[in-house]
Image (cartoon, rainbow, N blue to C red; front, side):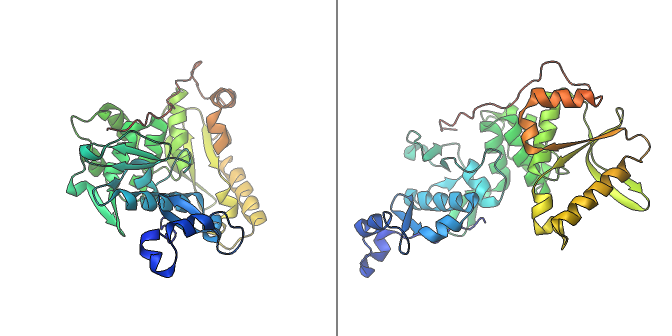
Length: 323
């Protein structure tokens, strides 16, 4: 969920006897009444915290932190992505990010990273009581600060949500640091990628030196249409990304059992192999995309021309702030 959990702060609850000391004491409780510290002077119900997913916990930390910083702080980078429902390639165990005026800047901590690139009124939106960078600005901030994989995953998701490519390009300031990296991300971004895993796979294929695949190619077999994730027509290779969601989430199950979904997928696989020109189908999982050497061996065995030495674009994100 993108909504934060209800936050308790000492200042508005003193009248009920819930001062800061009492709230902190309740974080040491077990069972009913336990609180979890979500930020400075910010606490949430322990049972609700335990039941929340990683994104909702992180969004709660964002609200808790920015409530402390005041109205001149704008949630940005990973924090804005979480609020907008954009994906995170590395998960949500990251610091809160905010963009602030130069006068408010201070060094980063383990829990908070501040940035100072000015945010115009058009680049800022309100989400509840929180100021957040708009989606195009958020995508470009991440593209300039992160690596190519992360940037493409987030940019693809923004395009899938209906944000226009022109809107993303307009968010690239001509004098901003990292604008060349942002342009590279936008050149690769494609809203046809159906999931973060597919977006990541496209970047990985590029690192491996593969030819650009056709995305969402449709084949018709016995009157049934089947769109595949990646199609390499010259080599006759289909690549499909398999995720657990296909077999566990209701939006994919469509009222079917997991066994029925598995059998339907097996039948679809067999039908695709009857298409003239389709020699083989490779099925990849999320984890396969992080072992380039093993992946290259599989792809070469299927007849895809992989580079001998992959060009790895993933890097550690430098988040020292002031950008």
